[in-house]
Image 1: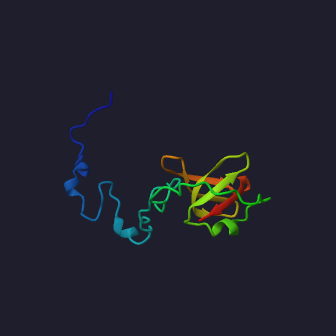
Image 2: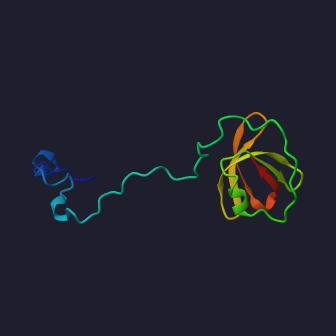
Length: 135
């Protein structure tokens, strides 16, 4: 057990005696004003972005177009002309669907895919597309 001394002055613990320019630890903030950078502005939370709100407002056309000539590879510039238009896509492996592209990158395309009941955000590698046609 530690000895207790009644005569020890603990006045430094009384926060009312600390000058106003010192904080409770005795740090004088005036010495360092302008030394520390101000905190960065608040920014949106990090993480993957959700789907953009630029999707179609109604369902796709009710018909299935006739497939175009099969291509060896889909060029980003070719499918870019279909941005924000209803586009029918045939994938390698016989899958086909209505698509509403909103972004074309060097190797992929993203947009909304029609499920038969509604639109879902979807992205695919351009190498998987066998052919497409847009309206």
